[in-house]
Length: 83
Length: 321
Image (cartoon, rainbow over all chains, first blue to last red):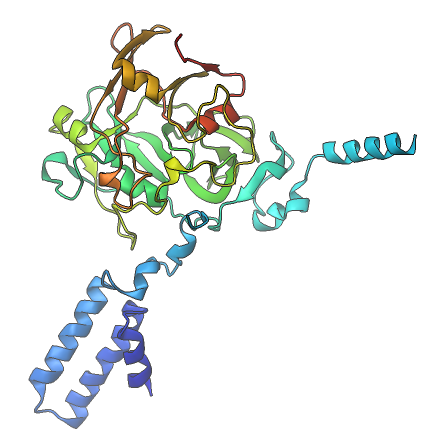
């Protein structure tokens, strides 16, 4: 269940820093208890999640509207009417 | 008779000051002493963001101006150049999203402030009566100008005049420091050994202006006051020195102006931060320097005309002939 939900969240880069650690657990578990011969594939997955955790959301992500404290940037500027 | 009584009753109601309880401020600001108020609270409006929704910064990092490559040549910075110390540039691209930077320069605590809705960029000494204050952004506006608050007493401060308006510090005044807004290019040329504030660790669109075309608006945001006199556009920039204001159009035409004991110069090269989506591509507004007869820089700022009129209603408009 978690792998579906977390993947759906990570695809649009939403809540990246909270989502990536959850997904990082998966290849670790599979590597350790399921398929110990697939180190390269799991290593690549883990590297991608670690990079997302370290860097945070990318410039085109939904997370672009939120700050590191989770505050929504949409309310982080004055609400001028659209022109 | 009845009509006169009704009119009198209405006028009496009109003149009753609005209290903090009426507005809900007391609930949202439990630490603020609403027993001390120097303004009409009905003039205070929410700009949209909650308290600290626009996050003020403290103790920023600096890098050498020579190594900074992210800034556009024409984009504005606030320059603070105390004698005997490396000059510091605070890029407006960061102040646009944070509005206040609490810094300490050679042991002296300062607050670098910028209100995008008034274009007022001002640096204040954070010391007051033996206490050092640190400031945050309340999210509230009065006459479209940022209301800051201090974290020590949660008093409210009107940025455009540096005055306490609500709370324990109501009526107190911060000391404005000599600082000026100039282009990054001008700063780097004048201070090759200077320092520039590094990019903050926040997810913000630094370099972008969230208030596109604001300085060509007809009316300021959440401003209900009267327009400036003499047909001056509300969002035209003016140079304010004390209670005098020089329209920037006049300074642009003059180039150099000697008036009121001041030598004012306008030179090309600074972009408006409140015009295009990219701050560095804004239309030309020019660099202003203000010096006295001895060549010393003078305390000033460059607000919009409506803000000068709102906060200095008896101010002098320096329009020349």
